[in-house]
Image (tube, rainbow, N blue to C red; front, side, top):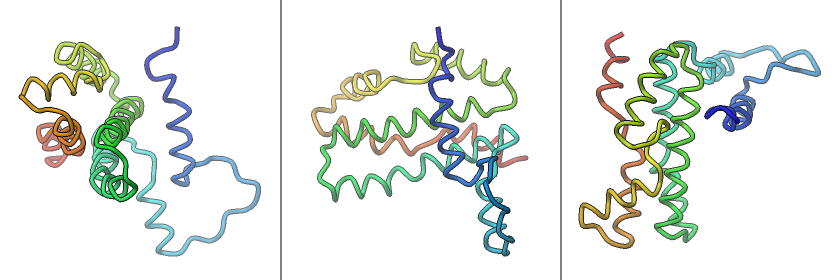
Length: 163
């Protein structure tokens, strides 16, 4: 049986390669300018839990911008909600994979299992049921999922802002 994060390994490697973190090269690297050094620094692999948290936040803050494009492309509210959920969920799982403090990962997974019944956070069906329980219907459900997908936990963010 595959470990929960193994299925995301390929996605993570692909994302890191796109970010310029590939470790193999067929030719000598080009000299770096001040601009390329800054860009490289922005895409460095996170080394601390707080760097991972910042990486996670940057993944999810892009969702509203991406959603505007999806609206322009004519995607339904349900499809946009599923895509926003997928971005957020993959960011969560990949962030936990990168966290050096595996004791903290265990704590987060236990919390999610208690809160959502799933160690990797809420499922899409869980979110739909939650929105229905608030009295939302049809597209309202999906629009709320899209909107909430870019909100992050201020408590976890505050810990990293202090350090």
